[in-house]
Length: 312
Image 1 (cartoon, helix red, strand yellow):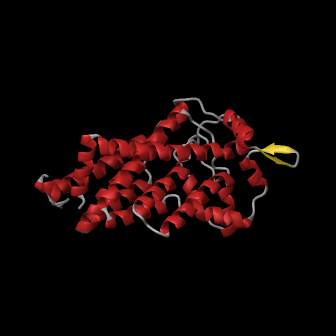
Image 2: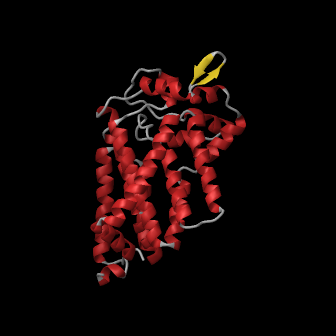
Image 3: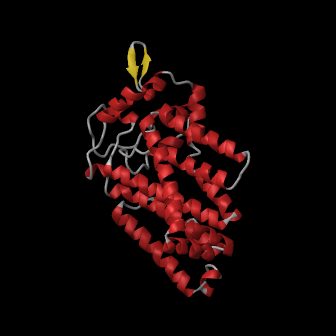
């Protein structure tokens, strides 16, 4: 392998100019595409701090660049909302959900979302909120664990995560879908530029008098991206790699978090059962697609080999 690659990333004139150029270019492009936000500056500060701090932090942030690229793509979705590409599915999903999973309650057939909204409890509000807070921290923490344990597995996990997200984005733009809370708030009428909503997670914020979920959903890229539920897809990737790496009792913890996120997505009216099932299918397809492409296609396998050498 190339000697420069196997030595890993180093700080020299070329790398300094490259990082500076990419940082400035990202901020300028973001300001043009979606408008300047403080989050963008925070991302640049973290990246540069890690790049210059030490050799291990430099390898760490370059390895995590896969997740950074995903975050940027997700943020840039605001520039071209999916409802401008394809018609939004609102009533059809609602009625299909009711027909397939409807629950009889007080003489009416309700969707699972409607049933749980009418039967919510403080205990479930708190438990569900705690599960939903695991959505991003658990995959990123697991990725960090793999980075220090096995760089190849870390890269496989990161690239699988990226493939699953790309599949999700394709469905977002080909099949825009309104979440259950949208119908609860606006009925079956399509309203462009509808802001994000905390749904049932608002009860968690209200109970603790905080604005955790409110601040999160104010930054959502697109309201009409409920199917597939990537909230439901991410923990499957984590569980898959937990089993692959023989993590013992930790597998039980991660499975519990996974099921908790699935149920909370429905309980808080952020996703239909259909959305959750679509997320499960998307994760399964993404995992298998990664295993097929990055182990069978020579140039993709070589890409992983070079990437692994670069951050080792």
